[in-house]
Image (cartoon, rainbow, N blue to C red):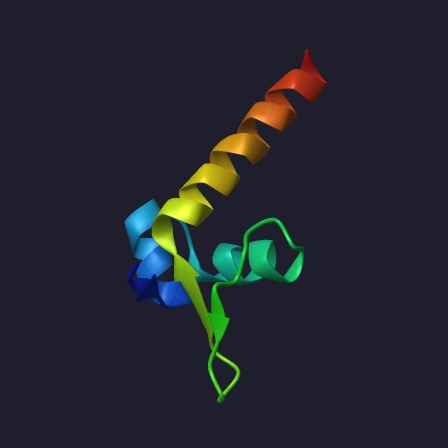
Amino acid sequence: MRLLSSGELAKELGISRRSISRFADEGLISIALTTPGGKYRFDLETVRAELRELAEKRRQERS
């Protein structure tokens, strides 16, 4: 498992780094690791799965 910084994750997902930080702070995506300096690291596949589930849940709520 390769852990990505918020900037790397944002680039992979095509969204802003600020969105990544907000999603993590709101508990919408899992933080795989917090470095001693307080930086978050994420697993790309875990976050992709969480965002898919979140999108599906929101679609169902609108139906």
